[in-house]
Amino acid sequence: MQVNLFGILADLAGQRCLPETPDELATGQALREYLARQYPQMAEQLSRPSTRLVLNQEIADWQMPLTPALDIAIIPMVSGG
Amino acid sequence: MSDRCVRLADTPFDVDAAAAAFRQSVPSAGAVASFIGQVSPESGDNPVEALFLDHMPEASLASIEKIASAAEARWPLLKLMIIHRVGRVETGQPIVFVACASRHRRESFEAVEFVMDFLKSDVLLWKKEIRATSQTWIEPKTQDFADKQRWETEICTE
Figure 1: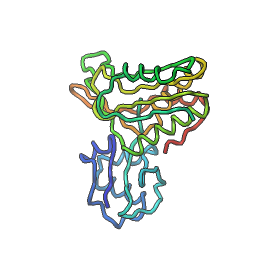
Figure 2: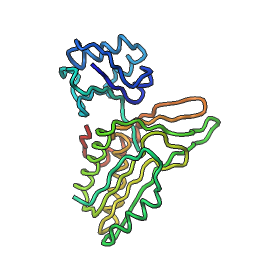
Figure 3: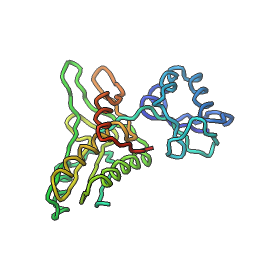
Figure 4: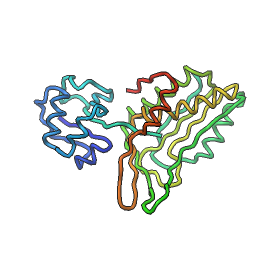
């Protein structure tokens, strides 16, 4: 599956898109734990309550099931204006 | 719902032209209030050279639309405009323009403040300060959350 990153998460990973994330990751939480292992530089950000899972452009619960067909993103705390 | 214009701009926009066009488009309004946020270099020996605004094209715009809807539900606005920059924004350039038109001044003043307070901490954008020797992702300040809470409402921008 493909996972898109935004803001500081993209900087920490060194890439905006993680195209070869294993399809076997069953839930958002499993994805979060996998990414924290694969990219330890993101672990602290991934553990924050303000870091959110986004599925098909909508904020989703970390326990939601994942499928490769979903548009999957992880976003850090927002800041506009 | 009032007449509304909400957009993300990935290139510099003419804020004076936007303000003039907005005012001229609502001749029935008794009041027009607006706010321009622009990139400040700040003081010190490592000044801000630019901001970078990361965004999710569909979701970021939708989150701004929800803030606009909340303002329209709260005040009897005749027109509302929000233009928010994304991408790299140089020092001195506008980053956000908010304008509200209404019959009376209070509604416009308050609606502009309301929109800005929620744009600071609820919109799906990510802001990075670019300085000569450093780059820092910016998070909302405690004051930004306090500013939003004074309206005693929540907007689900998600």
